Structures are given as C-alpha cells and as structure tokens.
Image (cartoon, rainbow, N blue to C red; front, side, top):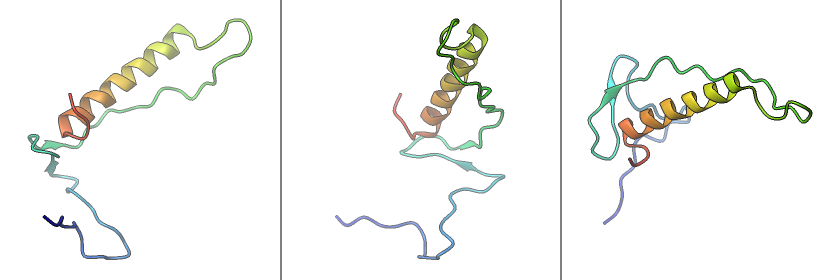
Length: 80
C-alpha cells in the first residue's frame, strides 16, 4: 500500500492545525495547543564547587521535561 502525503508541494511548507483548533496523532483525541511551557533558566552548570545545578534549577528542569512528556503523549507523538 502506498502512503499519501500531506500538502501540495508549496515551497512555503505545510501547517497542521489552526491556532484556534485541535490536533491529535495516531488515533488520539485531538486537543488544543498547549500553553504555559516556560523553559527553565539557561543557567550553565558549574564545574567548580558547588558542582552541577542548584536544587531549584534541577527541579525546574524535571518539571519542564515532565510537562513536555505529558503533552507529547496526549497528542500521540510519543507512546505512553
């Protein structure tokens, strides 16, 4: 079975979904665009005492990754 393509070959590319609409992939229930994703501060890790990230930085990174993971799963882009 041959696949089918989305789009008309326009040099401007393709857009899936509308800013006021919902979208889902691989049979998931379509949902609206996620909001509230704020990436953690881009503070570099240290290579001198104290090593690594502060507790607040580490917690912010984990929180952001978990929120992103949940949204990708809700859209069907990655599996649960």
